[in-house]
Image (tube, rainbow over all chains, first blue to last red; front, side, top):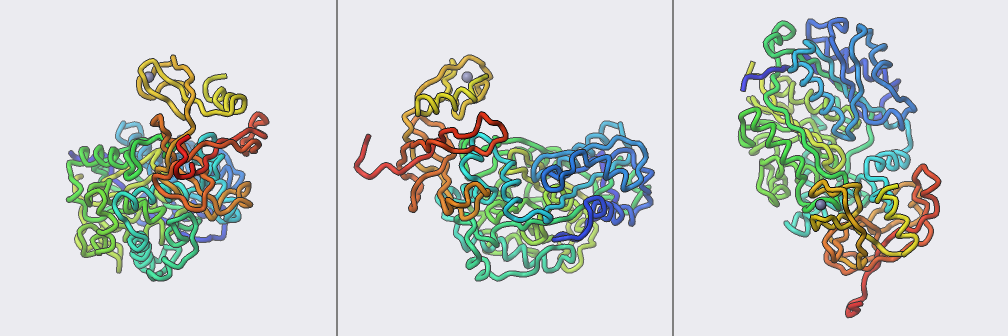
Length: 387
Length: 135
Ligand SMILES: [Zn+2]
């Protein structure tokens, strides 16, 4: 299918513990995004802001107009999107649909989160608010313990090992060491396996960090994209699906059904198969999440994800390089920014701009962004060809 | 109003778990306002045995502040005898998938939900059924 939408500019801030106000961090990502294009902030027709909870982290509700003020936008439509950790990519999808509909020509998509101003224990509590307040929160559930429940089932059914989980963390931190925007550098297998147990079987280095950061994209109609940049990245496919908010409402815990469904939709729309993807950014909030993702996206058979990672099949030079940005584990996970930052990485990879972590000759890229444990999932497929 | 709050009132009054049974045959637990299978609205309460087995588990060493005095503790997904699954705490140091468990009530629990109605409610938890005890 001929693409209708293209990304014409992309940029992100450093991820980690940042100084500065939310509006400054957000503006920095937009500055870096517009810098390489012929677009000024006054050219933007609409803005979709993905930010998970400045409400609870910063006492700031209604962030979209505040962030628009800080950019000097015209009096255009601006809206905030919230879908837990899938916030950024859902903002992107809303923006892409607005361009596809013909309503807007040039739309700014941003993702931002400022988390480190709160102590970690408060972040643990806040993040748990993305689980069900009646059927999960009263039992002391946390985000790591939700994924630990998934891990326990995968280990039980397929024999996935703590070493295989740790191999995901080692790989992603090895790549984040090559990413100047990433929060963390390399870790060894021994470091992962001896890090503090957070929620069995997940240890501290099986978990993504708490981060600040922002990322941004400008998207345009595909046929106009070359007005703004020499190398647009076309949106070939977009899929979004839901699964139950709570894990106990699902028939199986060894896959994320919404990942499978969103991927099927995106592959069909793009006219590609899993085997055609050259580089993928998948949602590795925890090591088990990447193992589930590489199976559910169709890169490896169900149950073989752990082995694939351990054997190097998800590294550059392997069957399918996954999370060469460092992923959420190594690069950081400022919640609302993550889905947008995944697309920034794919934009740069497909344009051959990724330096020492470049996947040689990558033509088709995929992003996979999960809200919670899969209550909302998006999958997007991109290519420099297709315009 | 509605089945969801009625569930918690029944738990408090009758000290048992109840599910909703739809006219289509689906057993809906935890209760929902409508049947997820057929979208019907006519459902009636059925008592559950409170017995089941651990389907998935973790042992948490971190928790929201109201739980930090209880660490570490086991959070599980329990498959109930009647079929539905439920998340809860299992009072055991040695959880295993397949472990048989039985519902117990923690009489007073502040559910940390911003509504006075949720203060000092009983909360359902589970404990292992000792081997050989078929009760
Ligand atoms: Zn029904």
